[in-house]
Picture 1: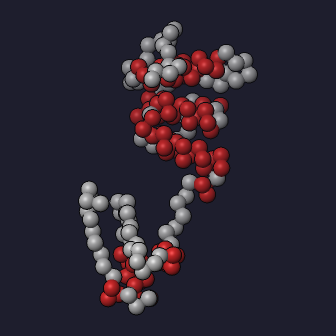
Picture 2 (picture 1 turned 180 degrees about the vertical axis):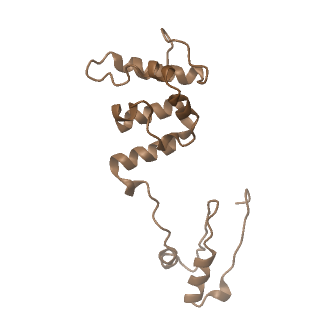
Picture 3 (picture 1 turned 135 degrees about the vertical axis):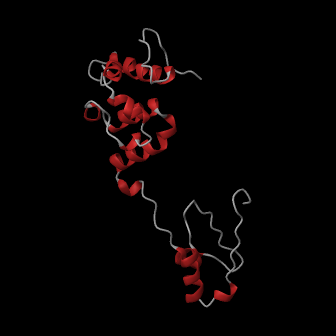
Length: 167
């Protein structure tokens, strides 16, 4: 649905920005203008049209890791910055949320734990195979060969590659 996104009274979007993105950012500003103590987005629309730094920010795929241009990063808290990134590029929201969690809760909550093959093997049973679903670039072959050798299972180790789309 359309939600609270409105364009009543909004100026035209800068030529480099989609009208929907402009409406989202305009709405952020409008939602907080009614609060005297929390009008943190006041002037955002004007800043977006006045500085070329915002266009570079908009076009950067590394946006979630960058500071907001024009001093806005120091003006907004982490959640408010998250709202701005979401308004600009919703496809980068997952990365922006990772930054938010790292800043608010600590890096521990965004780091993946190292894979413990030995622990997995100990927890497994002889009637249950270990199945690995790998991401691009992951290769557990050396670790599997070492585990098999250390446990005298090298002759029973079998590799089955399902390939993309076959799993």
